[in-house]
Image (cartoon, rainbow, N blue to C red; front, side):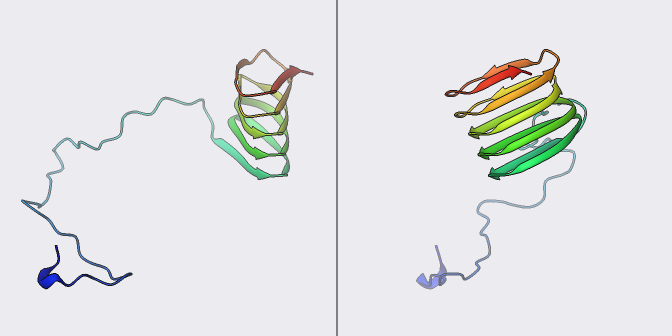
Length: 130
């Protein structure tokens, strides 16, 4: 409620109202909003490629590579921890990876060596060894 029935106009900043209390919370108090521990990920970072019609070559160093979008062509050299592909008509060639996740439609992943764990869903997606 606004005093005197005056409502702020559009774009007007109004200070927050604290009802029944407020104040500071001691640092020693457990937070109800503390994040849960995230699942551990393989060593390295995550590289993301997203968009439409990209042509990229990237080098893996035990990284996770995520490709999403439409009609992207990606060539990956080196050893990846995981390759994740989603979207439509993406073509990915990877030298070696520990795992492949593929979803969406008409995506194609070719791996050159190794025996990755493969998680496949979607329609007309293919994973094959070169």
